[in-house]
Length: 135
Image 1 (cartoon, helix red, strand yellow):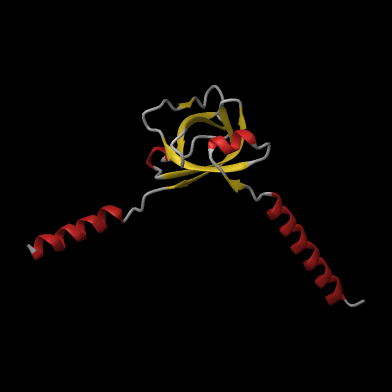
Image 2: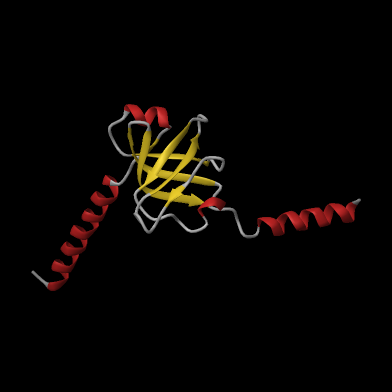
């Protein structure tokens, strides 16, 4: 066999390994109610309950951050993220956590935040300026 055949076979093996790895990380979106009945990793999208307590003490445990989110059904639950608190966490518009329910808590191993656009205020300003000129 030529070297090109070995390279092609190696690339195919790597591609298959990447696909298997990606497929293993696929989890479905759910609500807290659905997650409590499933025994698998799920993703829950929700909004931060800013009126509830957030606990992060990096001196005691830098990989423990707890907070509350409200899911699509309006149910609030405590989420324990087994990682450090993300920067600008309080500014997020939507949060997606990946993990499992354990009792009344959702234990998250991954978190994705949708933050507001830095141009949002600028867009509002431009719109209000145009409406002022029209009036």
